[in-house]
Image (cartoon, rainbow, N blue to C red; front, side, top):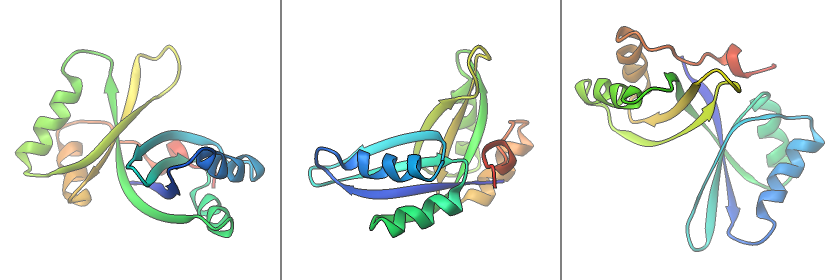
Amino acid sequence: MTIKQLSIFVENRVGSLLDVTSVLRENGIDMRAFSVAETTDFGIVRLIVNKPSVAKEKLREAGLTVVETPVIGVLLEDTPGTFHSVLEELFRANISIEYTYAFAKNSGSHKAYMMLRVEDTEKAVKALSAAGFTLLSPSDVYDE
């Protein structure tokens, strides 16, 4: 069970995030999660959105470079050590993590989703599911 993440490559300049968010706003696309990684010359905007196919199409039409990547969303309780438990399961399964970021499930729930990009998505899904973790499904995120 994976979620489509969009990675948009942007110049590291004033206003580059506006290039991305204006396309989303103009097309009624809602961001569910957002992360930015940067270097000296460029940045990578990672998005989870409610309409990934439409977003990818519209961002490309706007001249932006977009790559779709499968990621795993794991529901975490807001208690010490919960994320550590996820990491332990991936370690036991010998799965390397490429990157991770989080977003709140909804206000007041004391729960969050940790998004994970791993080297072997299928193996990670099996390991985390077998360990009893709740994974984010596409129907939890998408409107399409």
